[in-house]
Image 1 (tube, helix red, strand yellow):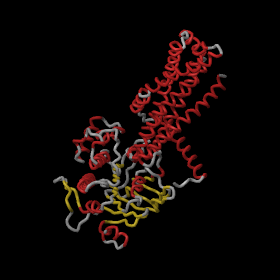
Image 2 (cartoon, chains in turn orange, brown; image 1 turned 30 degrees about the vertical axis):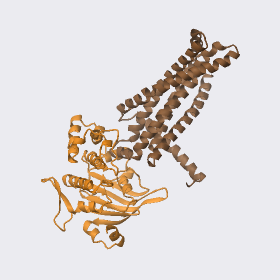
Image 3 (cartoon, chains in turn cyan, green; image 1 turned 90 degrees about the horizontal axis):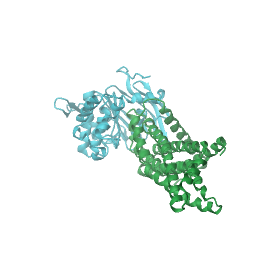
Image 4 (cartoon, chains in turn red, brown; image 1 turned 120 degrees about the horizontal axis):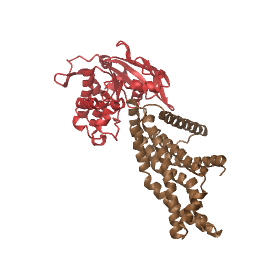
Length: 271
Length: 259
């Protein structure tokens, strides 16, 4: 039996309610609560080891919390069977920190993976794979294998794989981690493009504050096909910030609220 | 390195057995439900079955050769050297064929499965598979389970045949025994229960090789070092379990067939 993940636009797409998780004696997330609404981009910031990647895996049902409840598309993950979780994930795209491409498959097969699993006709698969790779400007690498690609190219293939099914929610786990500044900008450019072209709700982890603020202060111009800054002083109201520190949320709000925060730890972190 | 207390160690052991049982149960249940990954199953049959042919043939043949040499020396003392064919055939079909094939396939494939799945685990490919809506047990474990059980069955038959052939070559060429007598005594010694016993063992061994290899692969942590550790553990655990299972099945068959 298939289940419906349709919901009202006013309902949160992602909601964490008092979520805690620990591994052996290590408390990774403590009583975390937040909501992300339709069309919003939630930037997750914080020092390494603060539980950001764990939070992302919890949001996709790859991990189960020790306590608390997670709602995705209005459905509680704890009430879903494993089969229902797989159905839910068909509506969620995920970009992993190290790309996590299948190294025995070519770029074409990696990007087409989900469509192959859904038994989409071959002609349509080919068309959508080429379109997804064109979106990330990697059409020429279609027959290559992950080992033949640079780190930045692998991230772009990973983004193509995440967006090919036109998901309602995209989870980006540190898509710019370990990349040089120019490649990072290319990736941020793609994320902004995806956000503004498809209006997809997304959660994005980053260690680079400049990437986060670029997301908040730029938009994608579909006519000139490039990212451009918003007028001075303006920020994208759909971009929210969530700052995690040692498993706790220390900030949840807009770009302006973050920059005007008087919290000493936050000020030190942002400096 | 901090040592675990006995109760922590016991708890971990019980949890591991529970995880293994859940994985094996899920892998078996997937055989009877859709989707079924037939292409992956055939690819695994090729890799496990055809790929293991050289070691299985060579091991079987030379085991038969050694068995004929060793048994002839002892049988000669009792004036029963003509019984070499009977001893080689019975030993190969009932015991050595199934066990040695199981151990050979375990060494080659349990390690291969643990390292392949372990590498996928530490590079988040298993999580990516789940995130893309695919059940990794259905996609990775069930095809390997079916392929190993099916292929080990046929590889054992081949190993038995090669062992008897090896024994006959040594008996005829080195021991100057009558070839016809070798095969005749061998054939006449076999009973229905012996063949059933010899063909039941690889079913259990195949199950052990696939599930243990995949179990250790899927629980790998700690990067490339963890992959190496899982590979070693998979081979050790599957080899010990194959021998243990051989003992249990042998006792069961003696109870059923009386020999």
